[in-house]
Length: 294
Image 1 (cartoon, rainbow, N blue to C red):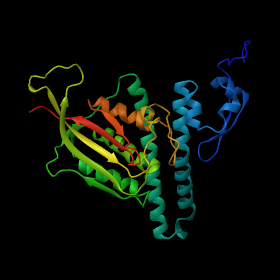
Image 2: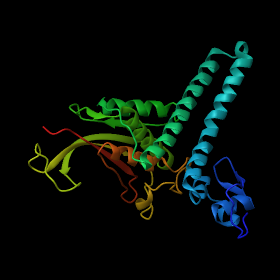
Image 3: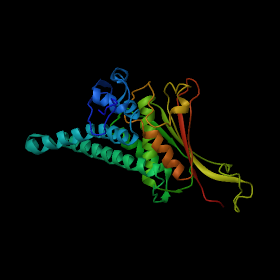
Image 4: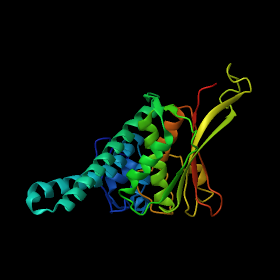
């Protein structure tokens, strides 16, 4: 502490969280660093608490918290396989290796999200576009998530003549994964729909008309992830894309950064990410990607 009672910048605080990521203890040093009494921080999510302090520290710590679970799983399974390989049946080996592979993919995704946060904030995000079949990508995402959520049922509905788009496949896969996982987490794993449509809209950037778009319309594809849950509370709708925001209903977990990152990735492609939630009809997240003019 300095003479005014504030943090000096060299102190380290201690925050204890439970398995659900809820803060159960905050020491005086951590409370001073975050600028809030410890009693007000207990019972809140770690992402929410860290979001009340320095953003850079909060981002790294929140993502680090998310990394702990898959890394612990990877270490546990690899240690077990190395020490008892001859005594483990083939079916169990396959299950363990499959879980290691899934957890490794999760770690990779979390690290990429951490890097994306920095790149989005500094406008240095680099895209590697190629022609992407969004319907095939959606099927792949559902299959990947079903490996850990076996009860997941999802219908992928795209027209036969749905166009391919020029996009960074890895970034769009990240967006789709975030949206489907979000639907499972806060809605229901049953009855999901991923729908693709082609449309046109007025250019909302500056009202100008491109030379090859004399009618003033820009063509785009839309992809909607629709769940069958209870929907999003009206007061939460304006905040779902805010950094650190987590809805209270469902099974909240994670860093509270997924939707914020997803919107940034879509906007970097020149598209938009929006949400609708009619009362009692679940939530529908839709992103658009532009198509070239005729």
